[in-house]
Amino acid sequence: MNETQLRSTAQTGAPATASHPGKFVWFEHLSADVPAARRFYEALFGWHTEAMPMGARTYSMIMNGGNAIGGYFSAPAGVPPNWLGYLSVDDVDASHRAALAAGASERMAPTNIGEVGRSSVIADPTGAVLALWKSARGDAPDAAQAAMGAFCWNELTTGDEIKALAFYERVFGYGHDTMDMGPMGSYYILKTGTTGRAGLMRTPAGGPPPMWLPYVAVADVDACAARAATLGAQVMKPPQDIPGVGRFAILLDPLGAAIAVIKLLPAGG
Image 1 (cartoon, rainbow, N blue to C red):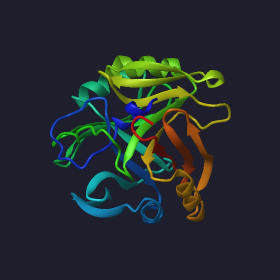
Image 2: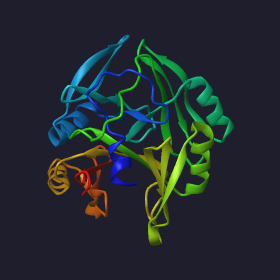
Image 3: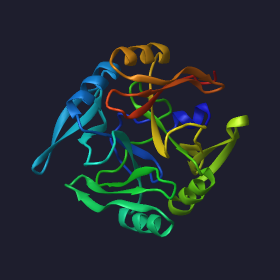
């Protein structure tokens, strides 16, 4: 990934106007303790939570300033704590069928989410879980620069990156660029047109099972990682530089969900 491609994925405060298929547009934290998750992330990123009625239930919506960027939800029995990324598609039912035909497995059948949109959940052929999403209101437009505290990238690590790449290109129409990471292999940037949408790479030796890892933009990665540790998180990958992109760290929150933080280099830096 490079600076321009990372920046182009940022959420914005502008009103949603149109769909952006191939863009991860929402991130949901699933755990057995929503209040504990809220306390951690509100202290770390300054997020706040607003209650949104959903039929007989109430959804805890994550607000970054005045912008809705995700939510908290109680994890179903047997599901470990995780961040679930929502991928915008033109037609949830059609994309869901295509994904299953290409080797994915169903975790949740296509379902209407109130009047907000339609969603399903799948595990790709390598085992990484993601949601498919069609908003009734359109998606937030792309921005030139990520707002602090906003999700700005999503990255798949998997034991079979070639199988995963073929799946995402076939089902979701991505193109890709390839970056040579030396001993770590190739890093694939999934693209719609010329816009970078997500990254894909082989899981490092001893790494976790296949998973999508969301990135949040912060002003100071080192300070953020240190603050996270005092709040009960584990720093799984200490702060380090990505040449030409910025500085990042990977955290495991107190509930056990992985998340990354990044500070991008200034434009042209």
